[in-house]
Image (cartoon, rainbow, N blue to C red):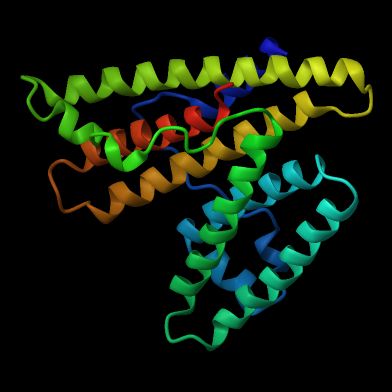
Length: 231
């Protein structure tokens, strides 16, 4: 399992300091059939959210049974309607973003619990931002680069440990394939993280420290992901 997770890590992360291409949505934009899908295909940010939401929902659904699975499916059905209803809003794109973020947050909490993680164990509001941590350093850029490397190493370790737990469950149930699905979710999350950080960098493109914004975003989001995966 460590091999599978490690391969996912190598394929997904690339060079930590290089902005990655935006993630595509979970569906083929050439076949976008409704307003919501067309709007998602127009926005790198929405496409990245959809790219992470789809496999995350699948990860959670595959781990639930009975009434719990029925409740999740009912939630998704209601969510799809509320997402599509964003068409009537003055700012439809902002509405879509909010809908995705709300459901994704719920799914991430469920996912962390189902794989034995501890989502939200550390309050993000209590910690300094990566930019603030490095602001007093003689070379703030080098400080951020070291932080990116350190947090990516922590993430790889957390993924490997979660993968080992999934592998043990797979041994008990040969049809579970939890390890493979966890590896797929890890890749999807990295695509989402890189696309979101690229979006933040581009939003600050007029700022001389846009690269620092990208690196800080990588550190911040990776720390949050590690907390979700930690056993």
